[in-house]
Image (cartoon, rainbow, N blue to C red):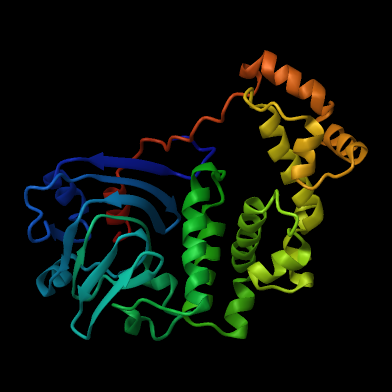
Length: 340
């Protein structure tokens, strides 16, 4: 195990029987009606955050079942929060029928019965022991079979998506802090109040910052990119926006830095033949002397010298290699260990 990163493991198969045996720690599964002869794929990247397990999965269509007998037999007393990136679900519980679609989070109480039909999907699943949430959310059991809606539910979905994207590169040793932050986010978004939202402020601000950065990235070559435009897109005040970018040297500094990075990427393309001043103007640098100073300050050399170097020696700037999670225990072993 690589102690420098969050503990992780990977599982994949194209055999439904192999998947059924692996997921049997939580659910009994069967193929959806009409899918018996269809190809099946399942891949799961799992990360361990203290008592929590977070998974990012791509799964073929199937029916998940927790029958009364199964619930009594395995004693699983945990909640699962599923964020569906693609796909969706149509489920039944003793209290209700419910369904959802991509972009929503579903809440499942594993101590209760469930039948859920789900087509091919990509999803994030967060497995949380009840004990971590029951004091924060006294009405926890009532959430089973629900798909929260509203702005706080959107924030929760964005947080779960951001969390699983960042986990492969986060340093080991942060697991307990991430677990606490995630509990605070769940509490703030499922039972919003001034106290809960304040406790979850760091996580909420990460989500808002991510929204702002996405907007900035999509509008780097737009003359309309401004502080007011970012505030309107994210739904925050100027004061909040400035606070979100304190660690980045300020929002205007961040925008300039990203524009210079985009220009640098364009200059590295051997097919790009436009003049440097023309490229710089596309990204808001209308004065050549201003651009030249900013570029040299950020990269330590002129745009002309960097362009020449990149074209002569493209291997000097290799692409970043993807992170490969460690091969440790299977995610089913981790989930099973939650019962200990």
